[in-house]
Amino acid sequence: MIIVTGASGQLGRLVIARLLKTVPAAQIVAAVRDVAKVADLAAQGVQVRRADYADPASLDAAFQGAAKVLLISSSELGQRGPQHRNVVDAAVRAKAGLLAYTSVLHADTSPLALAAEHRETEAAVRASGLPYTLLRNGWYVENYTGGLGAALAHGALAGGAGEGRISAAARADYADAAAAVLASAGPVQQVYELAGDQAFTLGELAAEVSRQSGKQIPFHNLPQQDYREMLVSVGLPAPLADLIADSDAQAAKGALYDGSGTLGKLIGHPTISLADAVKAAL
Image 1 (tube, one colour):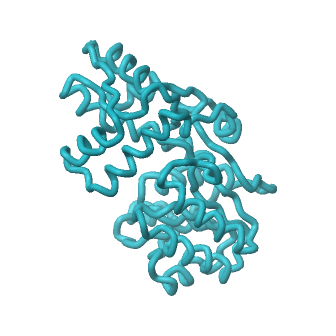
Image 2 (image 1 turned 180 degrees about the vertical axis):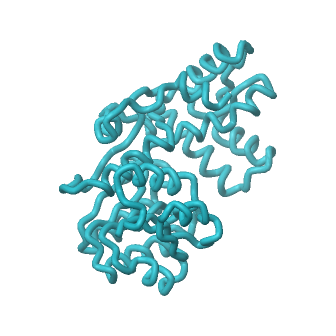
């Protein structure tokens, strides 16, 4: 069985969609907190099991027969450490043949504030004794294109990444990578640094939005604190605003850049281009 945790989320759903192209549905388990949210997957023959990162008993039940487990990182900032340890421990009890984890780009050296919980989880994965793969995902291009409607409405794109180049890829590209590892019949690497083929600055993103929309959309670079306050003012919770503002500030120093091309090689096709990412969002 291939167990995909967090399977009702955006990434999890994409991973399962990719797996269904090469793996029989009956060999895939969608492990989710709310089984009602994946009734459509059950209708396709995917096994659906309840699994709550905070409930070890539910994880033991969900991981029965696990050959491979994909731990998709929790969305609960500040709780990822204990939640992820529960999943790792359950995978150990299930004697999984592979434990894969969606980490963050260059987790071992990343200055991003969000990298700390990923490093903690990576340590737990390594200590588990299980064969493992760390899928160190770079930035999702959707992190930026998801806000283009607001940029168009306000006539400017705001951020704090300065001239930092960002090697972003589509969520679908990262899902392809996870599915490739999970469906592999052979050995896989222990660590993959995954990032988009085409790095861009936020100024280049604004220029592409301007080109495609026909509206002049400048990029306004803000100091970290000013950007954080702007994010809070539009309704983001303070902890999330802190995280985003920190990530942009570190991106300005190169923290979200990777030129290895590893992701495109792993998935067998180029990652999304900036032009296509903008086109999909507009």
